[in-house]
Amino acid sequence: MVFDALRYAWRAAEPDVYDSASRPAAALEELVELVRYRDLVGQLVRRDIVTRYKRSALGIAWTMLNPLGMMLVLTVAFSQLFSATHAYAAYLLIGIVAWSFFSQTTMAAMRNMVWGGGLIQRIYIPKTVFAVSAIGTGLVNLLLSMVPLAIVIVATGLPLRPTVLLLPMAFVLLACFALGMGLLLSTMAAYFPDVAEMYEIALQAWFYLTPIIYPEDIIPEPLRFWLFNLNPMYYFIRLFRQALYYDVWPAPERLAIAVAVALIALVIGWVAFTRKADEFAYQI
Image (cartoon, rainbow, N blue to C red):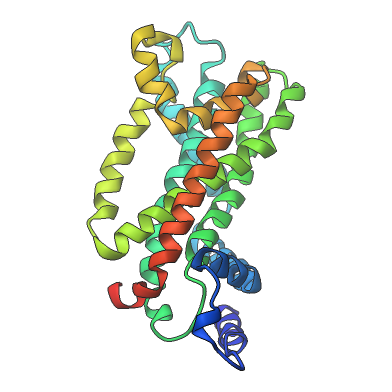
């Protein structure tokens, strides 16, 4: 079905008359083309999900068990150290679920771009479909991860309160930030293949600089500004926890920062990617 969609994309991309002087801005043109090829994005998401789980004995349930297993290991390792943190297992799993979405989708965006190198050398497709499909696949996995997360929240005695309505906003903002980062990383990786390996190392450091395993209040006040306020992932992890753990509505200024970080990353990533997209066929 993916190849049928690609053949359709090839036919749809053949213009009757092409005037390079009337070509719109690259960022806008890519957005219009992405909307036209939305069926291809859907097919790529479906392919990624089917390919990932078709040989697994647990199938799609692995998406739900993977963060749960990681939570169990880390809870055993750190629950005594952070015993003062109420419902530590839920606190930990919320951070793991949000972080896993970000790390997996940004890495997948770069891998998908490399995988699609052969395609973009043969036929026309919007280059952003690879990053967008990675985000789409990640959102499906994120929704599935909500099942074990809800079980752990209930098991640890945390009630689900009206702040859970923040979740859709948290999903959208984190997805926008991940897409922007994925596009920016894909652009750099097209020219410098070592970016993927360097990013994996950076992700490990970033994970421990973000309050996922440990509670925020163990960090001395003078260091919190540098570790948290200048850490973009902190705002999204915090938003997830406010929806499911703290039961508090975010302060307007904090929410505004999260929105600004997500949109700025998306715009920078989109513009940088689309300005260089025509060169990718020669670089990958």
